[in-house]
Image 1 (spheres, rainbow, N blue to C red):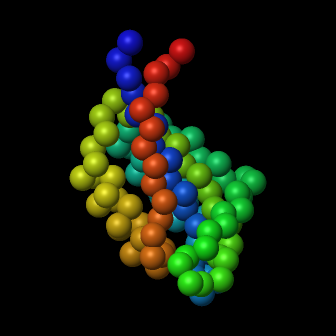
Image 2 (cartoon, rainbow, N blue to C red):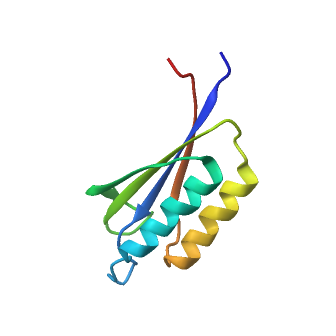
Length: 105
């Protein structure tokens, strides 16, 4: 079996100053990922509650949407560039992106 890759993007639903990310932005991200990879699963209806503690700072809570993409190729350069563009657009210090190697059953 040839392994595939699963990419998970954790997209905050608010900017750091509390402005809600427009639904149109999330739809555009879905379209971009679908166009490039042929499909995406976007968990948008029940936002997840992210919680993290930066060094020497108080706990930060985020509501997030999770986007999952299956791909044959782990193009690290493209994903790094895409993640950085989203960080700039959504005014985030870091957007979590994870890559898993998977085998389809």
